[in-house]
Amino acid sequence: MDRETKKRFREITATLRKYGFGELLNKSIKNKIFPAKDDEEYSLLNDPELPVKLRLVCQDLGTSFIKLGQLLSTRQDIVGEKVANELAKLQDDNPAVSYDEIKETVESELGANIDDIFEYFSEESLSTASIGQVHEAKLKTGEKVAVKVQKQGISETLEQDIAIMKYLFKIIHKHNDELRGFNLPGIIDAFDHSIHIEIDYINELINMTQLASNFEDDETIHIPIAYSKYTTSKVLTMEFIEGTKVSDVFESDSEEFDKPLLAKRVLDSFMKQVLIDGFYHDDPHPGNIFILEDNVVCYIDLGSMGILDDDFRKNLADLLMLVADQDVKGVINQFIYMGVLEYDMDTTELKRDLRDLFFRSFNSEFGGLNDVLDKLLALMQKHGIILPNDFVTMARGISMIENVAIGLDPNADIMASIEPVAQEIVKERTNISNFINDKKGSLLYYKNMLKSLAPLLVRTIHKIENGDMSLRFELDHLDRIVSKFSLVVIIAALLISSSLVMTITRGPMMWDMPMLGVLGYFVTFILGLIGIINYLYSR
Image (cartoon, rainbow, N blue to C red):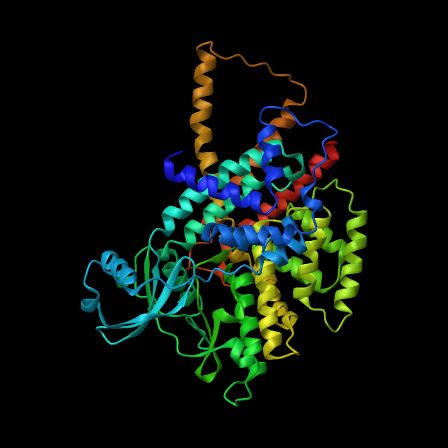
């Protein structure tokens, strides 16, 4: 370690000792030399003040640890409900840095005098946080903009702190049995990844552009315009949003706000993001949603987005429908299918707890999907089940958005927004054209495999002729093996050729698809069925 890192390391360990974590450090460091004795008793997790102590440690140690604490507050399934709720209180608001520092960063990043780029640039910040602050400005071309500027030295501080976190957490994970189940190194790796995305403002510009593209045909949703010409990794220039925070709309009696309509737009737009696009705002709290004229919903602060692959979002739609139907067995089976639960796991207690959760949440006037998801995370933590980070982030987003909708309209029904989206996904699955598109990667794999089969056979025969390889056949049932292999080759060839025909847009059509391709799939299906029957008969 260099001198500065050693100084920061001492500061961190001193703060940990200040709030009662000295025994944790002593035990971990001591166990590097002497193994723990069976009669040594020390249980950090049984300390009733643990949640508050953790929050105070993060608050005292500044930006890096505040951000880590905020990440952990979203992982109730790992740290538990009490710790998660306490860490959610962490605030990363910091005093604004001077205008001179902001001006220096802007000019350095954009490569020009600030007065040559902006008609005016407010010296007072609109908002400030630990990583950056936002200033109102106007471009020379006339557009009113908001400019987010990163504070100097932030990236260096984060790099230093993350290196120390990784060192400490690796030791604790290795030598502390009580905390090993939390996988602290894994948590730090996830934090390292997410915070580096957040501090690079180019990522936020990309997010804004993509989300705007996803809603380009929807006039009820607006995403701020991003100005790439005036954006770098440390400066982000975007459209200045002049609207009303949705939190202020909650209490407003103004007739300009159609609250039931707004609630529906908020829910519909978010479920589209999650279940259709697989690209969603992962922090949709009331401060990040503005209401514009004509009840248009505007999402801001898009530095961090959730991204779901196609398989996961489809599985997620199934899971949400099963939860809404209070189908305990279905939820268990879906979790097994998604790899969350082991197939041979004893789920007796989990089923009982799920039945109790559904009964109490869905049969209460205070319940809702957000309540169910929150309690589901707590239940998973109780049973020691670690959920995929994608699921946890999604559940947190849905909880937030449902709270926003209910704040606008107490009668808002999130299931009314989920159901049509889920039905659309079902249609998408049953559409043959979509199925073919989804399987293009697999088809290409098998096509390439068949292409490589011929040279492989040539090389094998060559080795046999040179005496480099010997083969021994048992002639019994050889004719049956050959016939089965021939059938597999024919089926594979038909499947590939039919898929290639499907790309043709002219000629005889059937159900808006090439007739030859459809017939090819039909014949492939019949041959496959014959192969299965022969296999079962031969057994």
